[in-house]
Image (cartoon, rainbow, N blue to C red; front, top):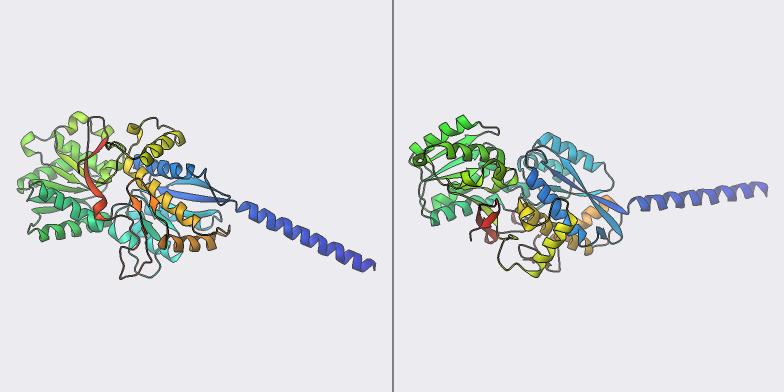
Length: 409
C-alpha cells in the first residue's frame, strides 16, 4: 500500500512537471521573430526604409496576430555574402524566428539561394532585383519578391530611353550577378528595337573617381548619347561626381537602375551638382509625393511617422521605395498568416505560411496596388510565380531640389 502511494505521488509529480514544461514551451512560442538581413553600413537608407515599412505594417495589427507577438530584429550583413550566410545560420537555430526579409543587395541572395531553398528559409525580398533570385533550379522555392525584377528592369530602362530619343547607349555596369543579369536584358531589349550598344564597361565596388573620369571620357569618345548605369549608391556617387567635374561638352545623360537611391547619394551629390546632369532612374509607381494619394496611403503615412523614430514628414522617408515595398509585402504576409492557424511550431508554421502565400484568397490593399493572388505555386514552367509585381508597376524617377524622388510617368 505504501509502495502504491509513492508510485501515485511520482506519477502525479511527473504529470505536473510535464504539464509545466509543456506550458513553458507554449508560452515561449507566444512570440515570433522576423529577421531583417540587410546592409545597414553601406546602404543605410534602404535598410532603414525596409525596417520602417515592416514596422508600420506590424503596427496596424499591434504586432500581434492570433495572440502571438511579432518582433523585428535587424542584422547587418554589410554587403558581405558570407556574413549574410552566418545570419541565415543563426536564423535556422532560432526557434522563434519565422521568416527573413532581405535588403537592397542581390549578391548575398544569389550566393545563398541554394542554402535558403535547401533549408526552407521563408525569405521575403522587398528590394534586391537580380532576376535569378526567385527562379529556383529545383522545385523548392522559398524566396518571394515584391520589388523590381531585373528580368524586366533592363528592358524598361532601355525602352524608356528609346522613347526619349536616345539611340546610342553605352552600358556601364557593376561586375556582379546583378550587373550581368541587366546586361542580358538591356541588350535584348535594344536588339528588339534594332539598336546595338555602342560599348560595355564593367566596374568593381570601390571604383575611384580618377578611374571613373577616364572611363567617362572614353564613353563620350565612343559616340554614345546616353549611359545605362547599374550600380549602387557608393559607385553612383563616384561616377556622377566624376561626370559633374568633366567639361560640359563631355557630360552624358544617365539612365540608371535604382541602386543609387539606397544610400546617401543625395548627401554626397548635392542638388546644385545634380542640376548639371540629366539623371533618371527606375522606380515603382507609387510615392507619398504623388498628388491626391489615397486615404489608405494617408493613413499609412501617419502611422509610419507615429511608429518610427526620425520620421515627422513625408520628406523624411529616405529610399521611399524600400518602405513602400516592405509595407506591402508585410501586409501580404499578415494576410497569409490570417489564412492559416499558427501552431507555435516554427517548422510547421513556415510550411503552412509558404502554402498560404501561394494560395491567397482575399485581395490585399497596398500602397502600390491591390494584390490579387500575388504569388502562385512555383515551377520551372512558371518562372514568375514568386513575383508580386510586373513591368506595368514600374516608372522612372528623378531627384528634385529637396532630395526627394519625383516620379516622371
